[in-house]
Amino acid sequence: MRKQGNILIITMILTGLISTAGIYLLDAVMPPIRSVQGITNANGAYYEARSAMEQALFEMSRDNPSYERANMSGSTTASGSSFGIAAISTVIPTPGGGTSDFDADWNRLGKYDPVELRIDRADLDFDALRIDFRIPDVTGSWADTTQLSGTGTTSMITWMLSGEGKTIVSDAGGYITVDDINASEIALGAKSGLYGTGMTATLTAFYSNTPSTTNGLGNCAPATPCFLKFSLNRTLQIDPDGTGILRTAPYLEYRITGLSAPIAEQFATITTRGYYQGYARSTSRQVEQFATNTSVNFTIFK
Image (cartoon, rainbow, N blue to C red; front, side):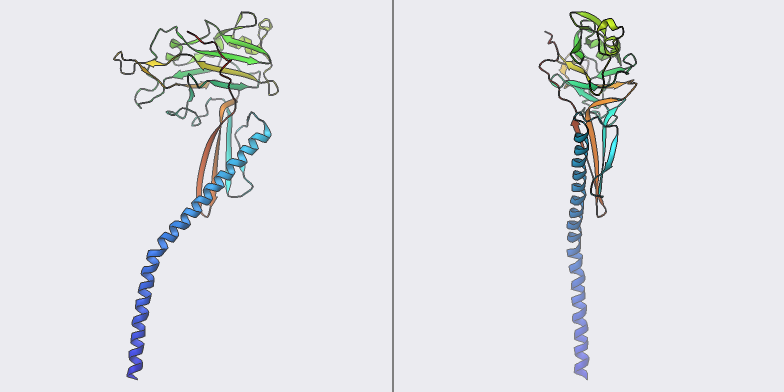
């Protein structure tokens, strides 16, 4: 009887030791297991988001090679993801969708990084359109206050509007100058250019073909799109410290407002979100909608 009692006590002690060891073992093993499972679930959510990106690209390309989609969104064939496409807007760029490295509300225009915008409608009010250029805020302290150095009338940017074999190119009175860039906004429609055999018209008149003697466009449409292009032709010299020591800015930032109707942005922004086992991951991508032939667009100034 005593022997049986001892065996029971020993058994209980061993059981307690094994249970204690098991608890400590679970405490040691479960966190890594949970971590591995979390990584697996997070990866699953990421690949769901990537799947949505592929679906969005498919939705764009099958509709139109130039990608104009008005705030399109949808879900993928898998229920664990969704996507959104922002490709046209009345403000260029869409807030938060810009290409500048310093401010996502602005786009970039560089000496070797020109801009091309597709216009597929004939009802824009270019007289109301405003384009603003500025030096980017590379230090976090002098955005939109740093001025370009140099003579105010020096031409910095040329523009060209073309469609169906008709083209107008900025002339001496229509170049975008140092003074224009240092100002807050530019009324682009009033800028003048040359067309045909040396005739002169404003950008607004040529775009709307008003008067008809301008032999202008007047018919920009999805089937016959027009293209507005900008090119920076000179180095951007600045003196942000006011010391007389000139520096070079990396590029200009620009923003277009006052559009009476949406036009396609230079870059479409795709955003996606994937879900898997309680985890969510997001991705985004900017897709250039147009290719600019920089070798033939503009006159080079010396």
